[in-house]
Image 1 (tube, one colour):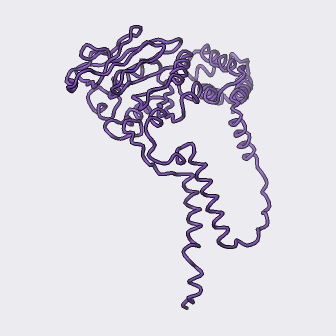
Image 2: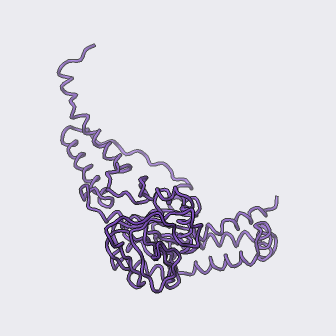
Image 3: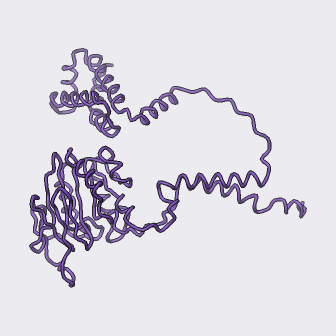
Length: 384
């Protein structure tokens, strides 16, 4: 049966645009297209100058790897891993950012920093200077680097500058100029490179360059948790889109647009009377556990969670082994193929951490992860 012209006129296009606009705005809250920022040398880039291959290489061997896109003054000291990599940033850190970085290093952090650009730069407090290459001709890229880290015959080094570091130890030079230096700073260590290209996708395809890049990372210390900073790349280029669609303001902008669309839809037609509220279902124990975990996460109460975890471990020892704590640790150490003294030291360090006034979530998670094998060994001792 054909529909009347009046009915077709009532079902106009505008009635479908409103719900489609609402669905689109809700979808943009979850996924937003990459508008591009003209950065070709970050760890997201697959270009020759990009460093995505090195990020994936480190991710294969490190226990924890992530990228940071928040301001360094905000995330330091607890928002990054044990090793912070700043590989050829688009923008040189400000004095306030350098103070935050070096204070974090002095407390035991490990920094790997690669310089880039054609402007002379200096790292405050470390007395390390980056001097761009002088002259108009292209650099000689045919010479091998001089280093003891890997074989010199199977590596390549591209650079547009050199370093001056009177207090640092030179570990790699090129054509008689210092290129990589290591300097102790407080309880931490700093590795500075005159070129970020050794970490690029292009150079990692040549010879032993992947091993050389990873050895430079190991110069800073143990490779356990590595954070690659992208905040200096993110804030170092002019905005190509409106400021309202920046990562920090985008959720607010989309919510305001959603309110405007809903208001327009509301005024364009009637929605009818309000529906009665449905009866709320009963809550189960899983929801209670989820709510408790969310409360701990919001309060950043890492010490409370760790204290409960240690209490559960202490309760398992006499119950499972039928003896004192030392006997339980001895049986667990035998199964884990380690010394009981090592387990005692892990427990002592964890108990010391619970006495802090504030324990960040990352540190608490790291300690619980290290104690997980002990819990597994204790559970395996359970008698049938």
